[in-house]
Image (cartoon, rainbow, N blue to C red; front, side, top):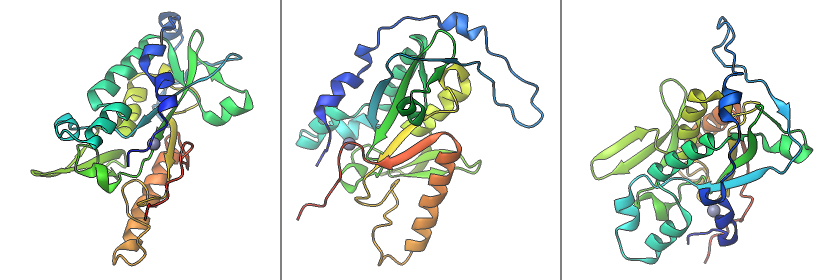
Length: 246
Ligand SMILES: [Zn+2]
């Protein structure tokens, strides 16, 4: 049931990222405006006319022991097509250090990409942001939630209970961009792809008979609103349309 396009994965690994450009020079151009209304940092941007790379991930493996421990086909699929929280953190650090900057996919399509001087653009996408039943008990998140500050986090459930943490792609990118303004141009974060199969964001909104379906829809809409407000686009899965198998 692990659904992925293997052909895309090699192009998405950090091993393909070897460009070394002037991150230090660009860093010197960051200016922080007086913070009366907001505390966002203004990054000067210049037009980019070259190609725009694309990195693709799934939701992250938070518990490698649960994901990879059993000797079964699911463990192999998770090993082949997913990365862990630790790995993704290292990938972000490498991308940043090697001069890459997140850009908006719509700007990429329109040929209007802009980047901080000396940096290179890429689009980040996250597929299957559904938290399918098959993966929930195998060390992947349970669903996306909003914390008390309104930020997107991931809910994890295991034998010890329910936990809300920042150990997933979206909260990690949010945090990284907040700490490294040069890593995002025009407020871009990425594109998430949902399939509709087993709901969205871990909310099982497809089950119209559930007594709390209205609450599920409300929670999913709140997540979507927050994502849109913080630079994340959503689309139907660009790689696959899930159809439940009989
Ligand atoms: Zn996928």
